Amino acid sequence: MQPYRNLSGRSGVRAYQPGPGAIAVEFVDGSVYLYTQASAGAAAIARMLELAQAGRGLSTYISRHVQDRYAEQLR
Image (cartoon, rainbow, N blue to C red):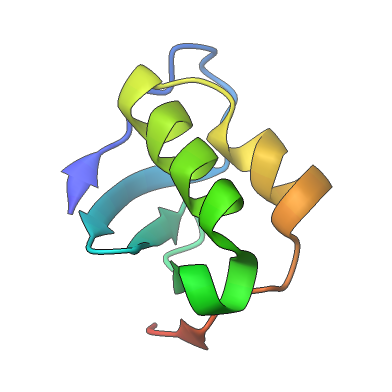
């Protein structure tokens, strides 16, 4: 997992791991969810990867647009 830069200082995301057509996201509560193109859509995964690399907006994007469209809970 790569640490999420959390430029706002208020994010619910701790870390992320990009993969082919997917992203795993670790939240501050320790839970880890895998989002894939099949579960959330290709456009959503692309946007999540952009936000993860930018270090801002990922948690908000997930809560507003992706919600529970994850492929599986890893932890």
